[in-house]
Length: 227
Image 1 (spheres, rainbow, N blue to C red):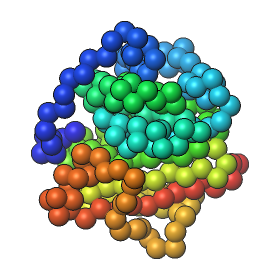
Image 2: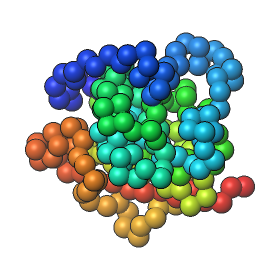
Image 3: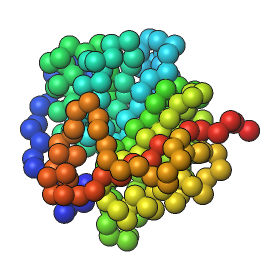
Image 4: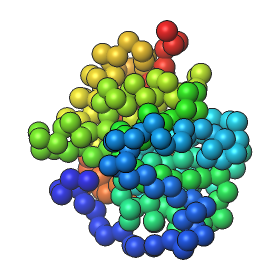
């Protein structure tokens, strides 16, 4: 998260070894960068001992929305990826306290880890309030870029959707333009983009930006048929 967007310190709920083993994978960036092919494919079977595609949140942070949905939709599985250790410890704490059997998290560089998503493994993908990396020198680190669209084009199951939500107008329009330029995807709505976002539970990020009067925008993509 960029310096100007910090919203308060996250409690440090370091998990017990048992909770860590149950809920959290950790892939080191330097190992991913050099030997990505040695890491396991992120299949439903590997993560959940299931054949059903899972819901993926890219940059899940503290996992508030993902945990809420896992509790409300016990028939589905949920998987979150983020790089922040403290945020994921918070997510693991709440998943464990709620006794959720259908959720797991991966601490890793998102763009390095996404190529390990197995084909057709993702039933729904979420990218909510990504860091805009306002300084120009950091734009190459933005999560929404061609590499993400490449990975998801393979990983999204038939009829799966990618939902993108942002409070930052410049970032949102950049992401929207990139999506519109990719012929492998189409928007699921007639309007160029949609206003507002009404999830089952608002994350601490969304609550903060809405209190500040920031406009929330979103778009949703479907994968065109594979070539």
